[in-house]
Image 1 (spheres, protein in one colour):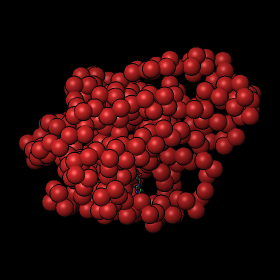
Image 2 (tube, helix red, strand yellow):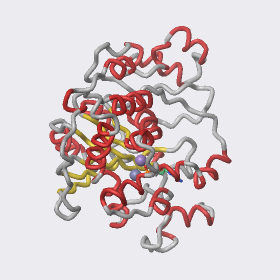
Image 3 (cartoon, protein in one colour):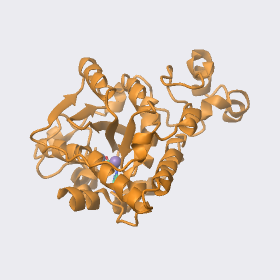
Image 4 (cartoon, protein in one colour):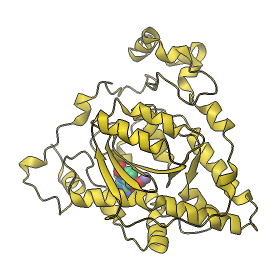
Length: 337
Ligand code: AMP
Ligand code: MN
Ligand code: ZN
């Protein structure tokens, strides 16, 4: 049962359903990968294929016997470190390190103003057929905006509920609970070094992609680090208001229950706004970074280097801190979003 506090966090006033209907069946009960809540058992990503590889995926990742033994606690963590260190490292570390900016990425270009939400194609994706269709579209893009919504209140490590993506023409909202076992295909685009992935304050998103889908990012431009480099306020809300005249209620929706289905219209609107304008914001910040240095790409490169460091992180289960759940609401992230 939810506590009084979690009720108020999970459901906005506009989602006015009876108390009985508010019960959400725990989605994690349907996950094919059983969630490992034992902190002594190391996290091993479920990666089986490695598109856009420079170095091949270690065979250990596909060796069911070794993985099962680790997950059952038969191989202890210090042995994993000794015998199978690859399993504890970021499988795309080398590709992220090797990635080089293209000429196009470090040039001043006219920002592409996005169409209004009403004039933009919007697709809700909750089946494999639709997922394949969006893959066909996003693999043709030069840039892609991405954001994740997660559930963290009533679960041990938490899980991703929705992934938003925007190209220059389309907005997608992906049901990451329904497609949890399929989303590894995103690696085809997310690790493609020729496509810029634009996220805002992506430290958590990078970890959640690794934890829930074994998805990695090569070629990241994080607008948070761009704003930081430019000494601008760091929140996405500020960037949206300043450059796009769009107002969002971050506090309400960051704390909302993203597990619920169907998603109410105001949730969909909020989710779309998180990525719809992000490529345009990227265009503006890229130009500002170039202009701040007499068109020398130094500052822009510093933002890409900082973004590269975020991509190179490796997700690990952290000790659970019940106080952290409380802290979330007051987290300094509020200043960044
Ligand atoms: P955002 O990138 O702002 O859309 O936030 C993505 C996710 O981060 C949300 O779905 C929440 O799970 C989590 N989150 C971010 N900021 C907060 C916050 N201040 N309090 C609680 N959860 C947050
Ligand atoms: Mn985000
Ligand atoms: Zn978001």
